[in-house]
Image (tube, rainbow, N blue to C red):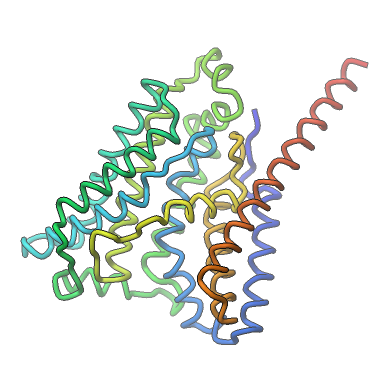
Length: 330
């Protein structure tokens, strides 16, 4: 079974690349490393980063969840609608409703993938369109802004700690550490590495593959619902197109963060570092005045490079394992 250490070589390497990227970006734009620049980086990364943490267990198990961006949009609009129509609906209610909405979609995804053994790519692409279509129908072209939201929600989105750490990113760090420790030290978390390495073998040794897979999709959906709350807190406005087409950006952050699409390798720490790395590069490109098209093209290039590196590392690991077995038999 392939299992990452708490902070593996991939995470350390990625962190060093992140530091280098931030240094290079700050050379281009000195404001990038100021207090306000750091807050902007964390704020811009928070929604993608927490979603990246949410889908990490799924990718580790060799699955994917493309429905997450539509969940963000729908949960954000629904919460704004409830806030506008019901004065008693507070920020804390939003933190309950958002994850519940996402978890409901996760239950559907988990049942179809884990229970009926349908391909996760096809299932979550289908639920992406279902949720996005539902969003358009329910919203009926109505949008909301800061005036329709509780003042406490907007204020919480602007709240910072130690002058650098916005509340949304603080929540990301809490989720990252909790998920990282769970994946490392709890048996259900470790089981997901075994499932990603070889699901059939994992089932033969008694690992509850259905349960682990099902709950991973529920967790992913609930986290995406929570990301919808963070989205609303950050932008203080929402319509039916909120976070449209951003799911591949989250997948890119995860893969660049060292989570192998071949399964069995990766950590939530790497996912968050990957999200920060992508956002830092985007910040540097913006400082250079690079066109939006080329930003997307560079993101795609980074994703391909990450996939290529993942494949090279996987082959090296297989060769090292084969050499070790030959040596043991000699």
